Length: 253
Image (cartoon, rainbow, N blue to C red):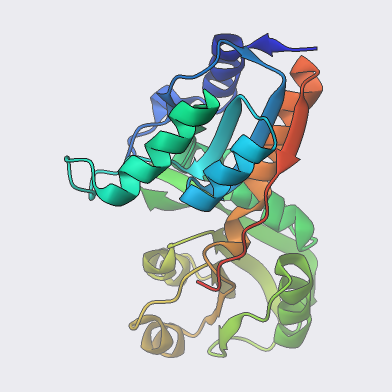
């Protein structure tokens, strides 16, 4: 069985409400390939290795959280970009990217899924980027010790987080902002949250956590952003009856 590429892209665009978001690059279809799709590959970043794996798997569509094009990249095509585009041409593969809209989604987004995976109840939106909240606050009626939260994070992400212990003995509220969300520690402190979880740390956060009396955990940019893109691929497969493969390419950052 197969489905039309444009039908799948339209479904994802609507599901993630991409028109509601300003972003650092385009969301939606970034490179058109085959019109019909039988196999979808999902992955965190549209690297050459991910695209080569997609070619090997016979995919007609790749869906990535980090697509090809960003505002901070050169406007000219670099040798690295050329090698990625060559793989898309070779395999006649379409590529779509979904960034902030996928972080923010209340059901299949990275941050909502992290809250659920940690056993926290998703409550208020949190962590503004480009004018929109893209994270969530997770709460628990049974406050956790920091060691308990660290264990849950390690189990969920399959890696040990960097931890700055600066907060209360018991944790009832956690601000969650996956990826490069360290700047949102200031929002977490202002809201009086007990802990803040993100992907990448930044130099300033150790002092911010100590002075703001909040626990800080950084579990890895890649590791905190596998959840949404994998689930999006699963949803597409379920809805359209196509094959889906999530390609795991771990990154220590």
